[in-house]
Length: 317
Image (cartoon, rainbow, N blue to C red; front, top):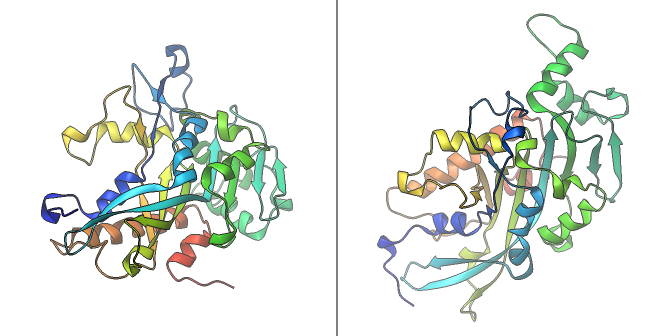
């Protein structure tokens, strides 16, 4: 097929659109709206929409089995569909203290450790956890470390679960299968609601190409891998309703489902100009901006994200 490339959205736009989950939404009972954490949900709402994490993972069901199809227009105007499989790269979930008890951290071996809350003693944690946890411990009023940890709890919440993938791409299982396995030991991965999660809750999804249609030739430009970052909290959903960066006709209507477009992005093996349109340089600017936001996010949370370091060429011992 031949398409007019100028009249269509760019290939980068198309990838971001085709890999953005749109989650089935539900309405929070009015009796529960008043109980929301006002630090995380400062806006007064007559209705509040939310999604469950279980419904979010359902968006990745077909993609995990068959790949997400992304139409791509080549330089000669010919189009093909490249398929990408999603893999869970990283996830951190923070909740209010009353939502869930215990913290689980899955490790490479499948073991997990449980802690009663985010403000527990740091004595049994790794040095990286200590640095992350105590990052907010210094305050202008000179309060005690315990007081400052409580303030940190108010802002970030209690860490319920985290997972960082370190296996090679060939040693991973698709996102939906991975979540199903992790949820057996951490059922909140299915039952928690977006309104229960703090603004610090996030996930990263690694997208690896598997095949394209029509087949029959190898195209180096299509070997690019992507790493997308998504918020899991309804806090940012509220902000989007107030100040939508997209055009007015793109605004979501109530009941249409909640879209989780990536707030950050990293790429690997990006070659040629298939993903970077020559017109106005907007794609290149967007790539730089999304990469910068992802980097800033990880630094704010003092997180070492293995895939991000690998994609961006950062090698650590």
